[in-house]
Length: 266
Ligand SMILES: *[C@@H]1O[C@H](CO)[C@@H](O)[C@H](O)[C@H]1NC(C)=O
Ligand SMILES: *[C@@H]1O[C@H](CO)[C@@H](O)[C@H](O)[C@H]1NC(C)=O
Ligand SMILES: *[C@@H]1O[C@H](CO)[C@@H](O)[C@H](O)[C@H]1NC(C)=O
Image 1 (cartoon, rainbow, N blue to C red):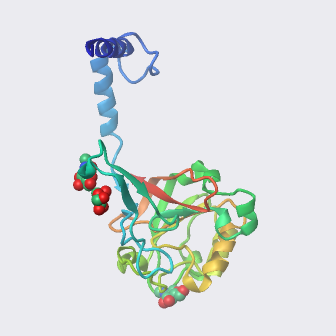
Image 2 (image 1 turned 60 degrees about the horizontal axis):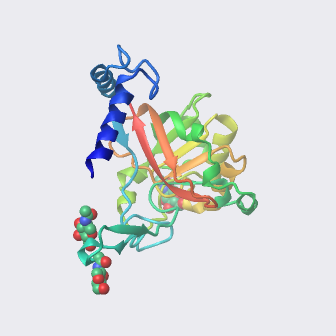
Image 3 (image 1 turned 180 degrees about the vertical axis):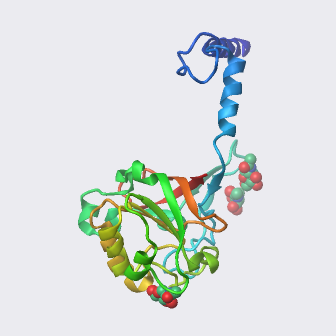
């Protein structure tokens, strides 16, 4: 009884690969329609994609979370378990949307933007994906206007990931929140807005804004709703330079933040 659907499946697959390209456009294989040639070509393309660096931290109960000494706590709960006789395992998750590697939406610190629906689902994927600079900043200061000026980031650069003392101190690997992290001071944020074309700001701890200017620096960044803040990135061991960055938040309608998966491609 099972043979028929499987036979139909094989017939369908055979048709998909052997009849010329209804299933995908030409250009993947030298001789369209010949399965072997297509897959060899695809494998070749894979080999040319370059190196991928995962700059997302894993989410665990010890993942740090703003203002919490205890970290994120239990994230996953098994609702159905094979150990208990279920046919499958099935988990549910509970996670603060600003824990670990995450993105902020304009509604995070502007209540009117929150009411107007500027949630993570409205974030521009063209800002979250594209060429980026990974830069090191001086280790003895927060990100002030003076520091920002000294970095000499050219006009036209739209995305910058800032590696700071936070990476050296491995703050994202410590479950207790540490308020002494490095981040933007209000004047540094304002300098970036006024003097650069940066639309994606990435940083290596839970907040782009230093704790002393936590609210004010966020307000400067979010005001125009054009700048996207990605926080809690793992930039350890990443060589400075130019990459393609790809960041994808979850489509959490109504949320002012979201966990985000970010990778760099060299
Ligand atoms: C299913 O869940 C149990 C815990 O009940 C776990 O030990 C096991 O590894 C899980 N199996 C799979 C395939 O994930
Ligand atoms: C399995 O069931 C027992 C008894 O109801 C419960 O104590 C235990 O937590 C369950 N384990 C899992 C993984 O769901
Ligand atoms: C950055 O600012 C925080 C307070 O927001 C402070 O605790 C920390 O020492 C400053 N870091 C540096 C390197 O100046």
